[in-house]
Image (cartoon, rainbow, N blue to C red; front, side, top):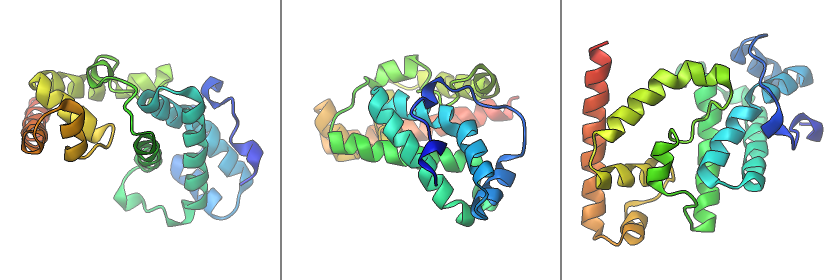
Length: 202
């Protein structure tokens, strides 16, 4: 992958909203089509940077993570399987996993979990177009989280957005390990019930 394909100005680049499908671009990348790769990077660089920035709250680190995520997507384009999920889910999962690794290396959570919920759970759709598409899902998730107790909500955010283990949550929140596990399990159960109920009522 040419270094110029992932630009350090990714956070200022507007994402294209038309052109070939994500699957078509990935197929081109898998066959060594540099133009497809560059188009794919331009389409996703804002989203992956936005997700990383929302989790680490450090622009320089988020940029490094975003570049690595896009490089990995480029390298692994030949093994992408559409039956396992959308391209966007695949790319953002790569980004999230890299970000979690970076957070674990730093052994710090830069953003308070409650702030993350209030800010919209670090949306990975920073553009107006992307935000419009994902707004309903984001509202549904925030609404479901709001129905949890404060302790359950914090435990879930720490576990699933920051990738912390129950033991790490226990240490951070100064609670017994069993309590941390219970909060995660109970919160996840209630969250699923609420979102399933809301989804069936629409």
